[in-house]
Image 1 (cartoon, chains in turn cyan, purple):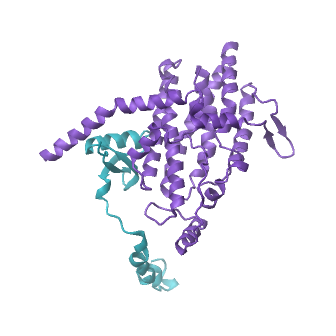
Image 2 (cartoon, each protein chain N blue to C red):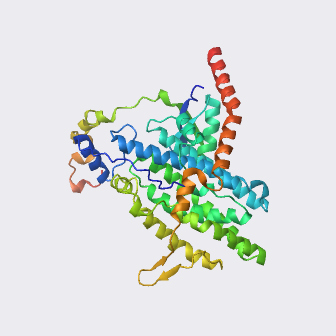
Image 3 (cartoon, chains in turn red, brown):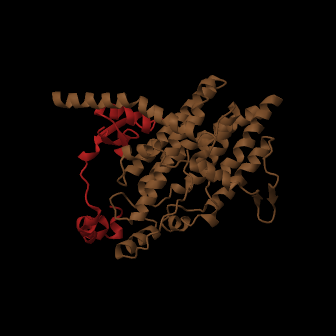
Amino acid sequence: MSATPLWEVFVRARNGLAHKHVGSVHAADATMALQAARDVYTRRGEGLSLWVVPSNAIIASDPSDRDMLFEPTGSKIYRHPTFYEVPDEVGHM
Amino acid sequence: MYSQALNTKDTAAADSSPQADRFQARIDAEERIEPNDWMPDAYRRTLIRQISQHAHSEIVGMLPEGNWITRAPSLRRKAALLAKVQDEGGHGLYLYSAAETLGVSREELTDQLLSGRAKYSSIFNYPTLSWADIGTIGWLVDGAAIMNQIPLCRCSFGPYARAMIRVCREESFHQRQGYEIMLTLCRGTAEQKAMAQDALNRWWWPCLMMFGPPDTESAHSDTSMRWKIKRFTNDALRQKFVDATVPQGHFLGLTFPDPDLRFDEAAGHWRFGTIDWDEFRRVLAGNGPCNRERLSARQKAHADGAWVREAALAHAAKHRKAA
């Protein structure tokens, strides 16, 4: 028998929050994936909305590229407000 | 519901490559390891084994309690038991999904369970003979599970730790509903109290075995501790459980089936008698009171559901073609 497809599950906990990854489910199609996600991940009012995404649709960065991708921002301290000097007399800005 | 330290011996990675050193340094710095990160093969194998055994235990653990759903003494008890058994199913699924991030397929894991190659917690191979067993399982079996699972929330492998946080949050109702059943029985008629005592007598020793073999016999423990998969030894968790549980039992007015049980004032611990490790090994080897029954119940459920899985896939395939 062929394997039942894998779906990643995301739950929006409260109005205004982003959907957050909670885990995965196996299901033959999208409707059943949504149903399974509801049963498995929201038994106690954990959310207002659910996303299911085919797992193979997620493209992830390679963790070993971490330095190449994210390190350069470490040196760009001029992107932060504290880089700029404002005299105390001016007050909070 | 429960992961048992089954500790099949595995030669530890005598790995001292730069990669392995970096990996250990991350663990020592309390960083979480994520599925795409480099990890030693033995770490991956250990986790696949532990997480899948834990998942199987949740799934098989539905059976002893499921046995009493139709005979729960009131609607309140029935609703609670249904919700609890449904939670165990959910916990099994969280855990399978955590195990799958390590590169093992769900089909493979299911097959390991159904073919009898995989292990699951020995506790679920004991029968639930009376309603008091449902109270005792909640109080003791889930109590032991919580003891074991709380440190797993800080396990070095991210997906396992996150699944455990969800499980622990849901688990506390399991223990409380069990203790409530025991309290009700112990405040009831003499027969009801005798039923509670009988259940405690039968479940106490198997519950102590849930923490796995004594530290002197589990060579595997050191590696798991170094990798921060495990934070406490089997014996340390067992002692913690006994210390927490004995006063709860005395409050119920029950006695423990252990003539050697006594409070050690100096150490502040309850000292208990010798555990029958032969029984533990017998049950793990497949010869407990219910091993065959549990496995055949799972095999039957899987076989009976085959047409549903096939029909769902066929339906999905037909609609993909039409689209």
